[in-house]
Amino acid sequence: MNNIPQMKNMNLAGKRVVIREDLNVPIKEGKIGSDKRIRAAIPTIKMADVKGAGVVVLSHLGRPTEGEYDPAFSLAPVAVRLSNLLGKHVHLVKNIEDAIAAPGQIVLLENIRFMKGEKKNSEELARRLAALGDVYVMDAFGAAHRAHASTEGAIRFAAEPCAGPLLVDELEAIGKILDKPNRPLAAVIGGSKVSTKLALLENLLTKVDRLILGGGIANTFLAAAGFGVGASLCETDLIPAARRIMDAARTSGKELPLPIDVVVAGELAAGVPVQTVKVDAVSAGSMILDVGQQTVALYSKILADAATVVWNGPVGAFETDPFGAGTRALAEILSESPAYVLVGGGDSVAAVEQYGLADKMGYISTGGGASLELLEGKVLPSVAALEARS
Image (cartoon, rainbow, N blue to C red; front, top):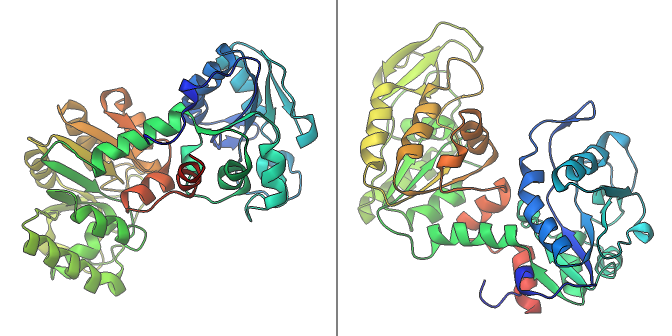
């Protein structure tokens, strides 16, 4: 990050500033669900406004048919919420040529995915977006892993491209995990499938001292270790990969503990009868849907002296009662830990917010896919473009 220009260091007075944010929030029947991403963007927009710039904000929302306006994916509710949070009117415009803001004004351009060429990183669209301002600020960490016209292309053609505060904060937070972390460094990786996190597991194993697994991912590893997992979610084709990772952990002296007891049920549904059993006692028709108390105690012991922890993915089907106890217990353990704790991934973030523990974590990442790719060791296209321009 040292060689990338940062918005906070720039003189923006009287300039036209374009800020690419990630305001892709859940909207149902015109009402916003979680506004976390909108709130995360407010400090950057306020900073540009206070510095005396005219501000044009860009964002995508959902997955509309590119090139077509669809009111279901309009940023209109986002413009209202932005206005409320900023304490000043944010004007929503549909056309690029209308995205003009004088100093002191804030304009939000309609869903960038209504523009033809956004996802294909059209040079024509990228040049048009870059030409909207004197300064082009990339602040949308949640979309930084996409090489789109507004996230990568416009940076290449902007007069003055730079990184926004949110993007900088995200990169620095993950840098604390990947570069020179305080040790012991532990990772807790959950979620449903090994296939979506195989590269993450392989890269983290070279970085961490301890790698804790949960959720459906742990099921595949349990099967690889010779345990029966009944009717649980399990990627049998990835059992050889799981064995390879376990062998690598043993060879390198890294801890890779698996659950020792699990919560099982006949189906994933609210209120069904459940049972906690040892991992060697899962019956053929049972589904593993959470970790048990002994496993939680094991997690607590392993994490007790950790100096740095990264958590990505729940350890059970926490959205459905009664399969959230393990994830909640893990969140509470981490909230009380003196370690620097980075929480990434939409489900993990949703869990800590649901339990009211977000403000007790070291850092809550706003970008699921982007943080995952960084932790996998990949370079984000937006960051690469900023580095190239610097």
